[in-house]
Every structure is written in C-alpha cells, then in structure tokens.
Image (cartoon, rainbow, N blue to C red; front, side):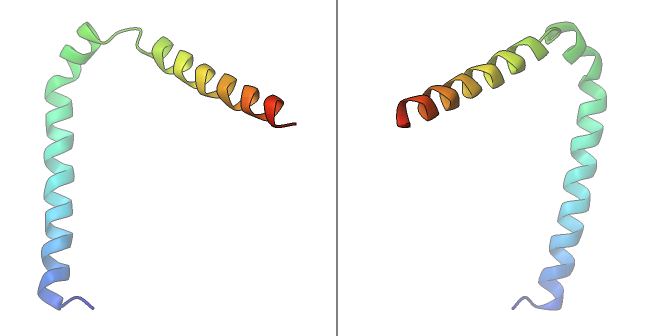
Length: 62
C-alpha cells in the first residue's frame, strides 16, 4: 500500500512533530498556568451539560 520511503517519511514526520509540540508546551507551561488556571471547572460543567442532555434524551424517549 505504501512504499518504504513513504513509511520512513511518515515515521520521521511524526517523531519531529511530537518533539516540536513537547518543546512548545514546555516553553509555554508558565504562561498556561498564569492565564488558564481553574479551567477544570469549565470541563466539569461541559461534561455535566452533555450528561444532562443524554439523561433528558433517554427520559423523553421512554
């Protein structure tokens, strides 16, 4: 399906891409802690909202 050179390119691209993402995250870690603190509450609220929608859908279906 893929040639050997395409597979080599894909693996190398993936390794370099992940490496750059890790380096970028480490550089911005202090900035993220400063500007994005308490964002876990937004995630919890979003999960609660999706759960409520699923419960309402199940109750109305029955």
